[in-house]
Length: 476
Picture (cartoon, one colour):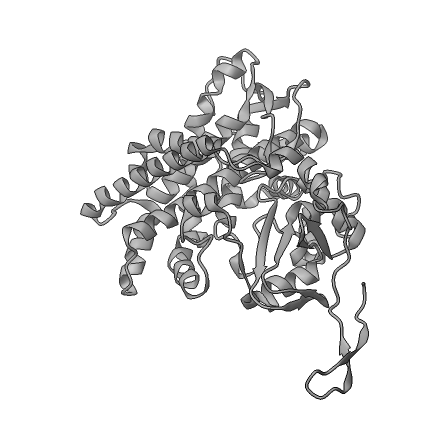
């Protein structure tokens, strides 16, 4: 039913009749008996929700195994959901693995506790604080990219995803824990890799969808979490003796929480650090994969980006340089539109509510699919086409601010969005200065849902030296 309708009902107390208004349920696919619309979700959940959004509009109701999932993909309705009615919804915390990984940090905490954590943590992500990090970030990136010189000398082909992942881990760890992170970097990054390796995979067929989780894989995941806890808590306890001097964001949040008279305990510190590390590095690493996939497939875009980067004269970008790389930013933003690492978020209704005039019952889950929103032709003409000019400042100014959500939106938007953009611009620019990455023509590319939208089969690319970078010349 696409519009409200009146019905005649009987008041049981008086026996009289009165007009009532039936709830206006969103339209949506009917699906099959029992399983509903499950099969398209198993085949490709991101394409499934995109098709539903295109066919049924900004709010749709999707039957899945006897229940309904609500899909919101209209910018004005998103504003209503995330801003106007935000107190009527809570984050979806039903997933065991995410609770084990990040605990009650910024991602999953609610209400007053979330506000307290956000206020304490926010100063670490202020513009001037972030600009002060660019120097060491450039040095770390440079040392990491030196590892690629031998590959480039021989024009080798290799999977860049693990390398992007490790680079993002090293930068995130150093940002959060300062220079002392170097003492645990290898151990911590290996643990993070194990957490990702044993994360539950999205079922891709009907049999897998109805199977119980593999207890062996759960045990391996739990073991990785135990190692994570031991490593992080050990770091926190060790550096208490120096009052966390030089420990990056950790220093700031300990001292700020102390000043307000409500010091974080060790478990709370562990949850904050785990949240910021995993939310930060995975999105950057996955983003780097898709950015370089796009550059490889669009030579004209790469040439224009290279021309902008060439204005730096070969030096490692400074904070001021990073801010002036406008076209590089547009390339990154367009890549994040088509391959937003966080491809979906969800909210649970805490009471009966309406969004866009559609009834959302208490307890129901509303999914916000960035993948679907960013692929709506009504928001982005010829939406599947890669075009960085969509993010020229004048184009951005004309667009609804809830039409682009790579870092979520509303009061629960990603606290590290600005830091992620600085990091991506710095890395993309420095790679362009030193190397050329070209997709292996035999590489199968398939976006897959996980903690981020990662390339299911990796991202094998051939690496060569950038023009002017000879095999024997040192990096500028």
